[in-house]
Length: 299
Image: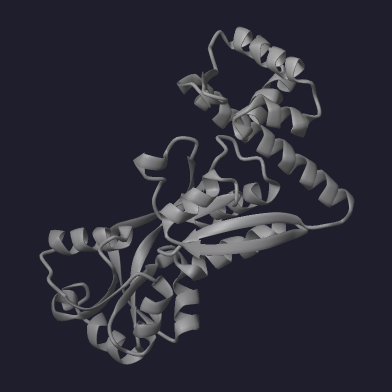
C-alpha cells in the first residue's frame, strides 16, 4: 500500500488556500524552501503536477483541484475529531448542525432528531431550514454536518455529496373533521372534485401526486399551493382544503393540526435522505440519526 505523507498534504492545502507560498509559510511558521520542497515531494508521490504559476500566484491544476477537495475533507474530519474528543473529555456537548429542506415534513424531521438525541448525548443541536440548493452549498463549505431532504442531491452538486437513504413513507390525505367526513366516503373516487392544498410544482411530493392523479384519471380542484409544508398544513387546519402528509407520522399530524385522515394514496411513496460530504458516516450523532430513521421509517 502507498502511504500518503499528511505533512506534505497539509503544506499543499495551506498554499492552495492562500494562493502563495509566502502566506502559507506565515501560517505554518516554516521557511519557504521547506514548504516548496515538501509540495514537490507530494507531486512526485502522486505523479501529478498540482500547481501552475500565474504571475505571482499559484493556481491549482485540474488534478490539484481534485486533491484540494480531498484535503479539505481530510482536515475537516481531523478538526471534527479533535472537537469531539475535547468536547467529550470536558463534558461539553458535541455540535450537530442539521439542514432541513423546506419540503421535508417538520414533524418527521423533529421525530428523527429527538430520537437520535436520545441515543447520543450530549449534543448541541443547530437546525437550519432553507431551499435544498442553499443547504447543499452550506454543506459543501462544511458549515453543516448533514442535510435531511426528500430527494437525493441533484446531479449538478453530486461531487463530494453522498446520499444516504433514510427510508420511505406512504402518503396520506388529511382534512378537518367536516371535510374528512364528506370526502372519506367513496375514497379515492371522492377526490375528483375535492379542494386540495398542495406543494408547489417544484416539490417532489407535488410531482408524485400529479402523476398519481393522472394515472387515476382525476382532476381535483387545487385551491392553494405552498412552498412551506407547515404553512400548507396550517391552511388545512383552518378548513381550506384537503392536504397531503407522510403516512409514517399520521398520528402526529392529526394531533398537531386537529385534523383527521381522509385516506391513503395507494402506491405513492415518498423517499427521504441524509446528504453528507462523507462517503462513510463518522459523526456519532449523525450515525444515531440514520440508525433511528432506518428503524422508524419503512426502509
